[in-house]
Length: 446
Image (cartoon, rainbow, N blue to C red; front, side, top):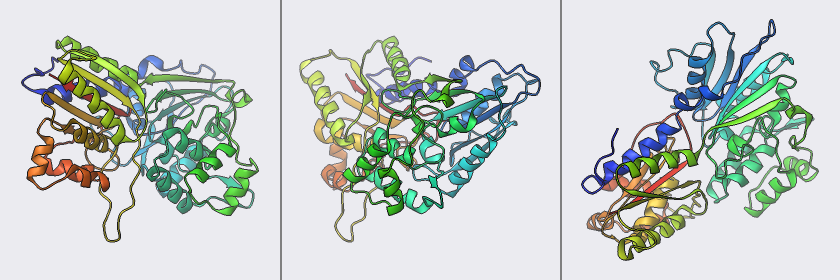
């Protein structure tokens, strides 16, 4: 479907690029080509396990492509509200789909993770396990670490998860900790599946597409260590129970490492990545006669600061035609972070996620630059924990806000991107997309 004219309908043009990026990563379009051949031994099982925001849609795509005469069973857990509509799920009858909380885990996720582990009991060399893994699986597979005579309690894991989300830790740092506080992540699910053949199908939502980071790598080797996890917790001043600290210090919660025998019969396939989605959007823009430049699919850092850097580049293009000539669109992806600022007594924190905070920093630095339009959104359709995918920035964003008595600096101080763009009518609301290749940012300069 052709994109709208970027000069007369810039918002619709950018939303078309976002839609193109999302569609590129939909399991229905990507998964079938990576499916393994079914086991042929008499009595062999095919077990499907999975977790992530896209896992229900991945299960749907798998069932649609799997031979009807070959046995299939299993369980996947996805985020609340991320189960495709019942009509779309009509074909899913052999794989059970359950829901749990994200980004902070809950008891439903703990129960689902334990059930997934229980399903691995009795697997043999003749059996096949297909693991469907996508972003969000770290929180959804919330089975706390266990040790002789005790275990990490769910409420402690929830508190640590909130602290990691609020302190500005990178996704790699967060998942290093999560793996060492888990009884199922960091390769432990693969260990439970041995000696069966394990095929992991991944949708990447992390910079660099490292399988050991995606959903905290439940079925792949973990190169990180207990010592690194403890250092991260200490660096961000996150308190942990003494019993947990002692076991991290002693290396007693170590994960299976590269080269371990439990991975000997494992295969891993990336079926969708952020780069592929950005390339699809770039191709669509070029087909519409607009030059497209992918800055990076691996951007990290504070969302507002990344927004300010993007704004400086867009202003240079708009004012000087450097380093790119107008009209053009600048595309980027990755996973930025938001560090929540402490608020005075009686002042509550605002609402919003990475995309919204990026847009606040972008708008602040663009200062109403003519000819610059932007859309930042999460490809799963949810920016943080709100109901919007992202937000728009247009040349009159600051002027309209100021007319309502809204200063962008105040909203940045409160981390209240949602409140700012809601008041302007500039939230992008799509609902869950049933995939997840992380941040999508597009800046159009005309």
